Image (cartoon, rainbow, N blue to C red; front, top):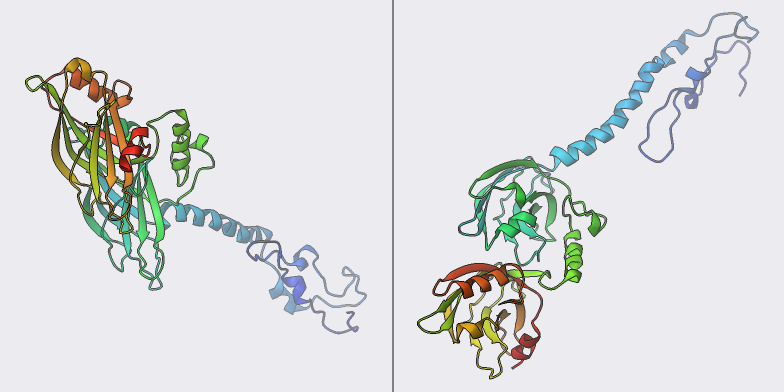
Length: 401
C-alpha cells in the first residue's frame, strides 16, 4: 500500500520477522528488511523527497549477520546434545557387581544402586526395580528380580541375585541383560533403561564392578547383525537360526544338576537328581509344580521308569533323590539316559517343561558327562545340564500313560 508524500514510512511486521514453516521446530530467520534495506526519501533513496531516514527505524534493525547465524546454530546443536544426554545420562546410572564362581557354577549379581533415573510418575519420581535375564534363553525361565523402591530416582537395593548352573560355555557366549523398570499398580510396568553385559568380560572368582549409564532398548535389524550385541526380540531370532542347525540348540527351559556314578560293587548305575534352577513357569501364578522322570533307553521291558516327588510352587526345586539301575558296564555303554522335567497338574495332562538326554549320541556336556561316568567307575560326578524345549519322542507317549 503506497503512503502519501510526507508521511512517515513504516515497515510491515511480516518484513521484520518471517517464520520458517518447514517441518520441525519453528525458528526465526533473518528479517527481510536486512536483505532489502529501506532508506528514507532522498537523492540516494530515489524517493524523490528530502530528509533523512526516520530515526524510529534504527531500533528495528537486525543484529549483525554473524549473530543471526549463531542464533540458529545452538538450536541445531541442542537437538544433538539432547539426544546424547538422553542416551547417556537422562535415563540414569546403575551400579552393580558381577562374580562368576566356577567351583559352584554360580553367577552372583549384586545390584547396588541407581542414580538420576528418568522420572516416570506424575509426581516426578519413579518406583524402580531391576530384573535380570540371560540371553539367549527363555526370559521367563531365567528372570530374576529385585524388590521395588518407592518414590525415588536414586534407589538403593543392595540385593544379591544368583544364577545357578552357569558353566564356562555360558560365560563364553551368553549376555546378561539388566533392565530397570518402573512399577505401576494401575497399568503395565514401564521400561526405563537397560544394560547388556557379555559374560566373557568376567574372569572366574574375580568380582567386577560396574557403574554404567542406562541405554534405550534398541532391537537389531536382523539375526545376522547380532554378533556385537543382542537386542530385544532379536535374541529369539538367533535361537531359531541355531535350532535349524541341529538338535540341542532349542529354547532353554532351565537347568538340572545330575549326579552319575557306576557302582562296581552293586554292578549298576546310580543316578542322582539333585536340584533344578530357573525352570520355565507353566502355571498362571508364575510358578510350576515340578517333578523329574528318568528312563534308560532303549527300554524293551518298560521297567526303567523312575520318578521324583512333586515340589509345589517353585522354579528352583531341590530333590536330592537317587535312583539305581542294575546293569553291566559294557551294556550301559549302549544305553541312553533320558531325563525329563514335568509340571504336575490336577485333573489334566501334566505339562512338559524340558529335558536332556545323556549318552554316546548326545552332544557337548551331556556326552562328556556320560563318557566320564563310564571311564571313572565308583566316582560320583556332578554336572549341570541345560533343559531344552525339545520333547524326546518316547517321552510323549510316556506322559500320556
